[in-house]
Length: 157
Image 1: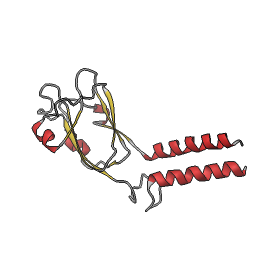
Image 2: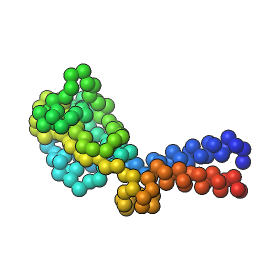
Image 3: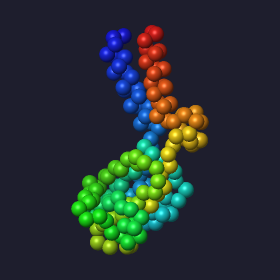
Image 4: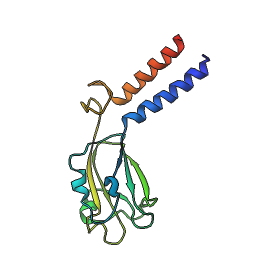
């Protein structure tokens, strides 16, 4: 196997392994991002981890999504000059641990309960049963270990 084939295989395997460890989480599940839905109840008991993707599905033009701070969440206000997500299929990658707040800025949607707060966990060392990584090893490190092993095996063949 040529050296470039090995490098290409390593990149593909590492990308694939890392993406397996992240979850796509559709806000509201099949209901999506809409009025008259209890997002706090929906989020209760769910696990959100760094690397996961929050997906906000809604009819384009009917709603939007603003990432706000705790005060903006409580007051249903968003920062001036901040652009809303408006695609109807908005994807937000959870990049850091901690509390995250999201609201709809259309009309009085936020005041009517169209807002979500979640607590994002750092997955390093997690004992999450959905993770393939052994306890004490970060999922990213585990993904690179798998990729390295696959490349090693390809070289040996």
